[in-house]
Length: 63
Image 1: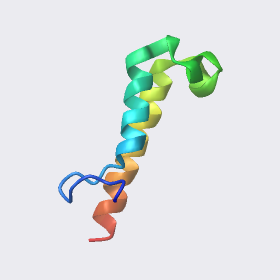
Image 2: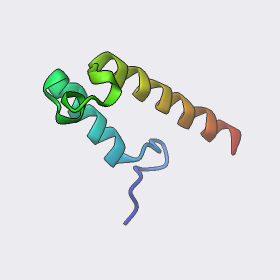
Image 3: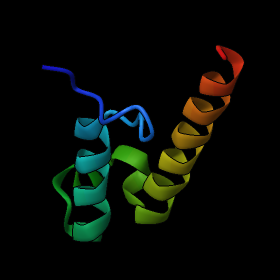
Image 4: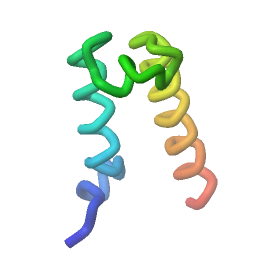
């Protein structure tokens, strides 16, 4: 079973679900409380957006 969604949505589900959970919980998310992403939900979102852009750019480069 693949960890990726259908061809038109090639995002690794587990990473997206993991980050979405962190964004939903905000400052109460255990990783932010532990100091990851400088404890900032905004920093988490910035890193997630950079990751998504990287995947989009990489995807374009292989086709």
